[in-house]
View 1 (cartoon, helix red, strand yellow):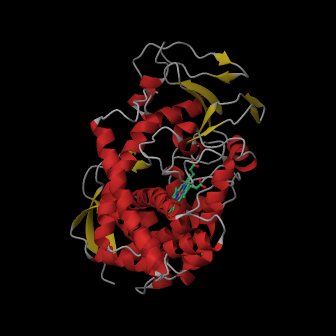
View 2: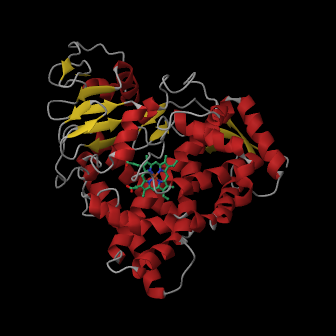
View 3: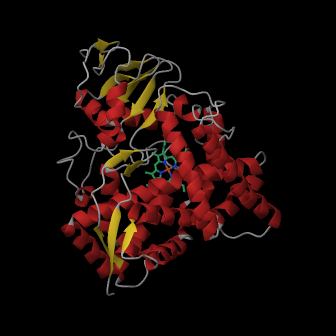
Length: 450
Ligand code: HEM
C-alpha cells in the first residue's frame, strides 16, 4: 500500500495475529479510504490472518486462507453468522429477510421456504426466457453502448420476468430504486461513523423514499397475484405455493421482503460479472476467438438451449475465471458467536472476521500465475476452498444455479450477435456494494454476419 501517512510498526497481538501498521487514533482507516480494494490485497500480503483497525471502535480479522475460510463457512457456519454490521447497521426500514435475520433458526426457516423456488428443475424452465431477453436487448443496440448499464438492464429484465413476470416499464423503474438502495447500503456498511437512522440527511431521505416506493411496487405485484389465483409459472408462484403448503409459511409481507432481497442479491452481481467478461474478451483476442469458435461449432446461429450447456465448457470456464479475478462479492463479514477457534487461532466472542475473497482468488499459494486471465486453469484440480465466488456451506448463495444458467446462456447469445470493442477509457476496479468497473464501460458494437 503506498501511503504518505506516518505509520506505527506492526505488532503481534493476542494469539500471534499481526496487526496491520497504521497511524495513531485512525489506525488503518485512511489507508482503507484511499484505496479500499488495494487495501484488502495488501493486507493479505502480510499474513493469512491479520488484525486491522478502523478508528478505536472497529477492528476485524482479515482472513485470506482457504482452509480457514472453508472451516468458517462450511464446518462452522453456525458459530460464525453474518456480522451485525451487515445485518443491523443499515436499517432504514424494519424489513427482515434471509440476509438480515439475527438468529440461525430464523434464517434456516426462511432459507427452507426459499429453497424449492431455486431448485434446478424449476430454473431449467427459464432458459428460453433468458435467451429471449438477451436477444431482444442486443437487437436494440446502437453503434456504442454503456456495457455496464446494458448488463444491469439485462439481468433486471431476466429476474423481473422469471421472478414475477414483470413488464419492462416496471423493471426499468425498479432498477433505479435498487441502485439507490444499493448505494446507501455500501456507504453504510463501509462507514466508520454511524449516523443514526432517524437523522434526516439527504441520503436517508432519498433512500427511505426509494424503499417505500419499492415496497409498494413489489407489494402490489405480490398482493394482486395472491388475490388473482392465476399462476404465471414464475418464481413468485412457487414461493406462494411453498408458503401455502406449510403451516407457518411465509406471509404476504415476508414474500414481499424476500423478493426484494433476492432481486437485490441477484441482479448487480450477475450484471457486473458479464460486464467484466465482455470487457476482458475485448482485450484478449485469442481468448475471444476460442470462445467464438466453441459457440460457432456447437450452436451456429441457432439459439442456445439448456441441452447445449455441457457442450460449451470453455464458456463455463470463461465465466468462472472472470469471477476468480473479479468476484462481485469481493469481501464479506462474519462474527464469532461466542468464543470460538479457527484453525489454531482463538477467536473471542464478538470478533468480526472479513473473508478476503478477491485476495484468496489471487493467492499464489493456490493459483499459478494468479494475475493472468486463463480460463483453461479451470480444467485443472485446485484446493477445495481456494475459489468461492458464491461462498460455500449452508449460507452459500441460493441463486448460484440461477446466475450460472443465466450467464452460460447470455454469453453465447451475445457472442453470436455482436463483436464488442472498448470505445473509451479502460475501466478500473471500483469498490461499491459489489465490485464493479468504474465509469460506463463504453463499447463499440459491430453486428456479426451470421
Ligand atoms: C454472479 C452472481 C452472484 C454472485 C457472485 C453471488 C454471490 C453471493 C454470495 C457470496 C453470497 C453470500 C453472502 C454472505 O453471506 O455474506 C450470496 C448470497 C445470496 N445470494 Fe447470491 N450471488 C449471485 C447471484 C445471485 C442470484 C442470481 C440470486 C437470486 C436470483 C442470488 C440470491 C442470493 C441470496 C438470496 C443470498 C442469501 C442467501 C442466504 O443467506 O441464505 N444471488 N450470493
